[in-house]
Image 1: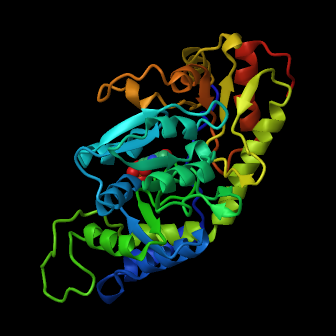
Image 2: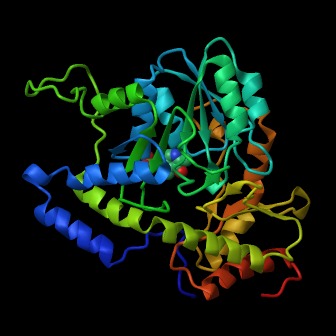
Amino acid sequence: MSTPIAYTKPSITKLEILYVTDAVTNGWGARCYEYIERLEQQFAAYLGVNHAIATSSCTGALHLGLAAAGIGPGDEVILADTNWIASVAPVVHLGAIPVFVDILPDSWCVDPAAVAKAITSKTKAIIAVHLYGNLCQMDALKTLAEQHGLLLVEDAAEALGSEFHGAKAGSMADFGVFSFHGTKTMTTGEGGIFVTNNANLYEKVLTLSNHGRKRGQSKQFWPDELGFKYKMSNIQAALGCAQLERIDDLVSAKRAIFARYKELLKDFPDLQMNPEPAGTINSAWMPTVVFSEESGITRQQLLEAFQQANIDARVFFWPLSSLPSFTQQLSNIYAYGICNRAINLPSFIDMTDEQQKRVCQVLINITCAEVSL
Ligand SMILES: *Cc1c(COP(=O)(O)O)cnc(C)c1O
């Protein structure tokens, strides 16, 4: 059996070990927030936003932001049907109603025209999720949000380092959220961050994230309101600070892996990969291939071929509306169609050229494409 190829895993250097060792050795008592504050400041500076709050996960950051913005029972929140459960779970936890709309066939992100059609008098928010590093059409979504007085949220967990006409993904909406889960471009093990330019929203989220204790509240053990506990630890933040110092290299490495796949697969007929429209940068978190309908290739065939080759490739997200917790929305034809003939390719930072060729060889063998590596 050939050696296994992982799908994603973090890039850890001496710097990460140095910072984490320092945090676990010295980061207690009066110094217990040092790395957290540093991560928040440096992340906000990297993104070009005013405020950041480190959290225990992206799901937590999204829950906090939606709660602070007043999303609650009966409110409708629009998002793409093609998504990971994390982007919708907080909506449901708050008693709001998720409205799943179709994706665009090229970016696999939410279709603004479908969003426009789904807006009702109950709509309160749009969650724009940048899928696999690909960008949503933020200009169109912003226009819609402004016209209808809706909250616009960016879930940029998969697009750290992507840029839309000069603006970083996650910096363009009322608030943005990121994940530092171990599979993401930058990691803290588990973790996330909330970002915003809105000072009021920032204060509300800060209070909610700390069990409802207001900043400056001097009374001990006195929550001013009922909040959540979604804080990041100083030790995790130390890991995050080291990763953030290396972020340009990490993003470049991801982009290089994607570019190499594109090069290796350039003669492959009818294969669609992550797009990078003019004026944008795709940080290539997850290189993905989508086969044409005519190819007859199925998800199951792809999975089995990769399993046989001892390569950990992942299926394209199932439509959220197809999961047991929701009601099927078969009219979302792209969300229901593309996932049947698509697969995420391995893309961990230290991947070798030989490993990338092994991945491509699986695609060539399965289709009998006349492509040589
Ligand atoms: C990974 C991911 C999340 C969840 O992040 P956690 O830190 O695990 O909560 C949310 N949204 C998107 C788009 C993701 O890819």
